[in-house]
Image 1 (cartoon, rainbow, N blue to C red):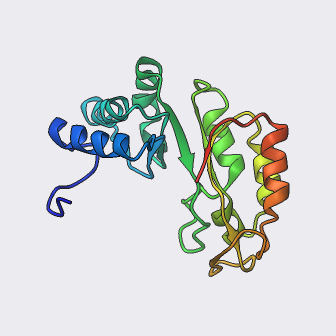
Image 2: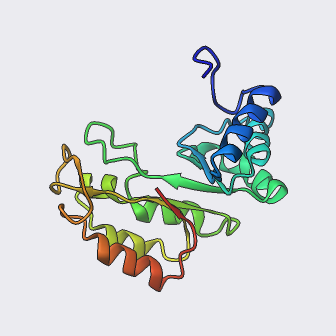
Length: 186
């Protein structure tokens, strides 16, 4: 109810307290924050983790691969997970690799177990990938999921109600269950 107040990891303690009170009023438990950039500088990264701790969050979702050496110690200190999010393949930007689950696996496989992937199934479909195959690649490293069903396997595909698209949501959920996934799905 305060349209001029920004809501992010730079929020004041007073603003955070107000939001927490409103969440409590409606019995809502926040679990993730992001997709947000995590700065490479230690002080900037620490602000993100302090915000996560203040809200009692389980994880922060990011694409900030370049900051992993900065935030891995914070993951351990704060016991807050970090999930790398995949956006669709960018044909005009060959340096963008977050769409590729093999790339994300290479980034996270030798890191603290609390650093993993946010499996955005819709963006994998937009990238021409089968979400079930991607989840299998990332087995044991999935922190959370943005579960989507899309109308077609194409870059311009749009979200549709579960079961009306090409994503095979039952197979995705079955694979997550087989892997013992215990994160959140949004």
